[in-house]
Length: 418
Image (cartoon, rainbow, N blue to C red; front, top):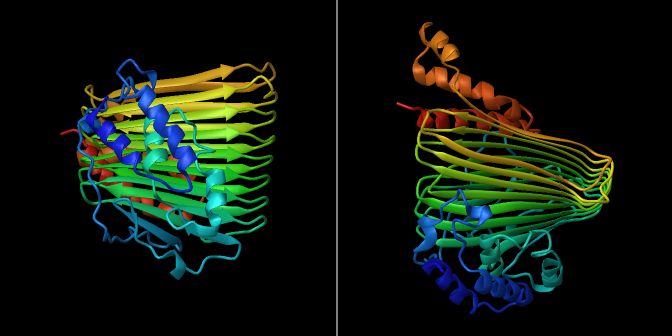
């Protein structure tokens, strides 16, 4: 058992609120299963040493922070700074059909929150159980049936101090509703953050989703975005992840209704010595579902990436169409990717495919640019952009596309092998 987990368990025993039944179950599992070893398949390539012996740090009561500026993005921002909600939800003019409440002050909405909390997110994840047990900061977003919410809702998670921060986002998207939700995490301060989001997407609803997991440096971050799709529901999700001492994101998509359609694109960029782990699981439990997943990574010198993508086709999920592709570009011989795409199929009338590739920078293309006077740093950026720009261009939100391109250029400059 790790020192950090022991302290978290003691902290969890002091929490008593309307979510206690879920918390108690999570606490029981944590005490039974304990800290994973390197033999644990889910953590085999992701060392937890940065947090194993960490002392739990509590955030100061008074926190402040502002959302990162994104030019041209007209969004409603909800900001968490070091795990504390700093936005006054009552001062926001919410669009028609949208109700938002904090988990700490759910009041009359406590039954609605309890009906979603922990019901979409799988129970197999160590840090997800920690979040279940101790998270008291978060928001619940209820979007009414038929509501067409054109203004994106952006949830910002800032890590600026050495604190342990645990937040949760719960979203219930009603029948025939449409909305855009952005999860934006950033920071490089020594810290430990868990941030999980659960989306219950009803029949014929459409969710445009983004997760920017841009924690770097000494910021340890483990989180996940989890989706349950009803009949004819549509999900278009984009993930952009950076590396740090410890950075892991889990994405789970559960096709619970027929004719649901899910698109997921992921980009991860690792500078020298960083770690990033992406686990995705697609559960096709019913017939006629469609999933397309593309993940592309660029791994810098002595950096390590982990990708584990699993598509599970249940016995009754006939007529399923599912495809998973993982492509990786190594910037040096000392960069490492452990990739494991999986297909587990129990139905006999499906069309599925999966694959993974690992390559290095094309020395011929690099030489061509260098001999024509292009500086090496610029040449590497040009070649890298060609590798991931296709996924950036697929992002539906134009303002986010235009903002992300120069942000990635700056990131590439830090990843150059010198």
